[in-house]
Image 1: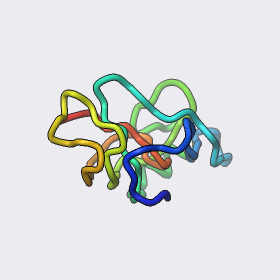
Image 2: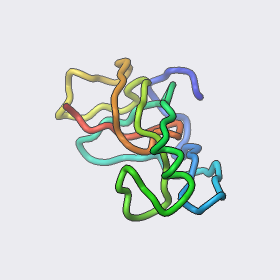
Image 3: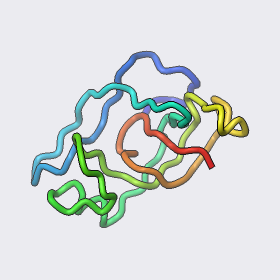
Image 4: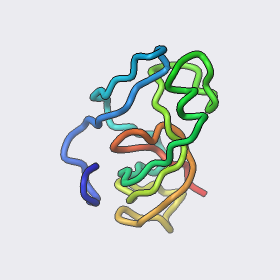
Length: 112
């Protein structure tokens, strides 16, 4: 993973894509972004049995219904891009939590 910074150098991220049976690929993808959501630079991600099911195929424990599937639910990292609803978590803040798609360099986390 990248070292902790508060700015991203490119508009893409490497992401582990699964859900296609035995095929799992490390692919370049657009940086995730969504209005009002924090972007986390992932430094650690947990691996659980539901992640393995999700990566293997038709069972998706996280209920992702469309698009390429990125597994991973437990994340620790640094806020790379903050959001107005979570002013208490500015860029550079260290965070941990549960979200979706954390087997990537960057993931989205909804404010609490």
